[in-house]
Image 1 (spheres, rainbow, N blue to C red):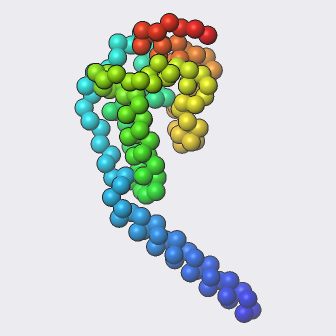
Image 2 (image 1 turned 90 degrees about the horizontal axis):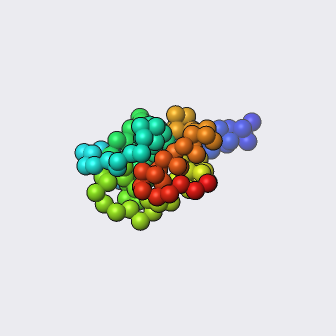
Image 3 (image 1 turned 120 degrees about the vertical axis):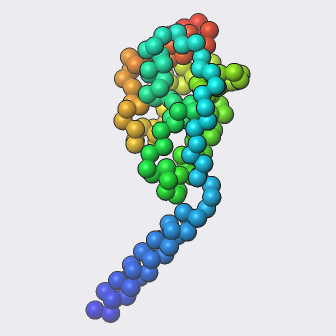
Length: 152
């Protein structure tokens, strides 16, 4: 009886601490900038199909057209999403094609190697899951859009 009571008290205390920590996390200002700057210039897509696949699988992190779901307002997920979008836009931003992107030529091969979109993103975004044929189409289209030759 005494052991059960001690276990319940410990469980309640642990739950209270967890809820308190989660509540405190909401006050941390990082992860609250869920803005979408205006679209400056998109690339000259090689085809509407490439744009459609890129929009489905890439635009949330690699454009200024990010769709911010409800959990993007709750820490610590807001922190993770803000970081992914900030880094994604800095590496390759389909909404600001006026800047040179050093890693842009690698985009197609990252899709083929299943590095993009990341599996952690795909867990909550079924629409971004591409078939093998769609990945090949996207990779080919991204290379052609960037003026690079396609090689399989």
